[in-house]
Image (cartoon, rainbow over all chains, first blue to last red):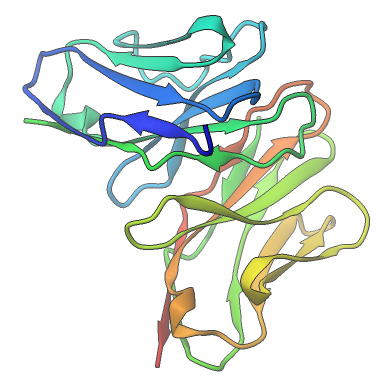
Length: 115
Length: 115
């Protein structure tokens, strides 16, 4: 696609429920990233995928968070047993791979509200 | 480990005056450095980047940034601010030599330009 697409744009859920957030990167981009932006906070790195390499999961805040990327394209971020502190905007970005200077293109984000 | 510091939560400047948004970084080896901007109700957009070479980098919308290796800084500047520059600005760093693509962002600096 022309840009990075994220869905849903807004999600309201009850504490304890599981949620899935989807990211469809730019076609041909081999690198995909997830970040979290909480109110008043910066961009918190969660995870990135690069081609067929093992993902860098070092930013995932707990084992309730997981992500996968199928076929080197679409990615799903799953949050199990959601907590109120998980409320944030979850941003996905993609970039062309193999050159570290490549620029990230961000999606519009998925705003998660946990009641 | 990589880190980015944006020491100012907020910068206020009058329209027509020069602006500076500060950023310092910590990374092993040589860095790739980036500035991104988030306008209200819009996604994060790339502004400019430093890879190598000339320490003064020019980017979109009249912005520029100066790489200072000895001070590990990459401050964003603009000679004459516009009200439309009001936004949230993020500095980001990626290490050149890790073989990975992990990009770390600062906490962000909110710029207010008053007419």
